[in-house]
Length: 95
Image 1 (tube, rainbow, N blue to C red):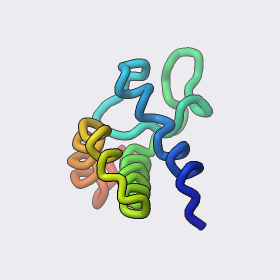
Image 2: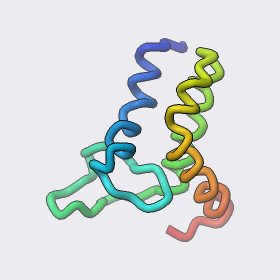
Image 3: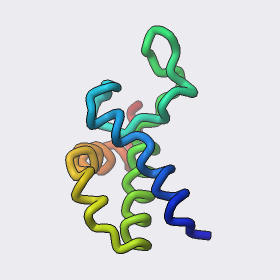
């Protein structure tokens, strides 16, 4: 069941950190904000194509359900960064 406040919180959890430069990354979406981040800053579990695809799909679904195109505009930079990565690596996984 769709719950706008809950779903916005789940989708919007990574954006502020990434857009503020508080976490560094390559061209893909991060797995999460802390569960798999160890003290050295290295990820113990990486699934870049899956995570990028999930963020793109969930963000689009949220925007479609709420009519919130402003949400897409607000985060266009990251969405535009993740999309080419997802397209390039989703068919043949290299990482």
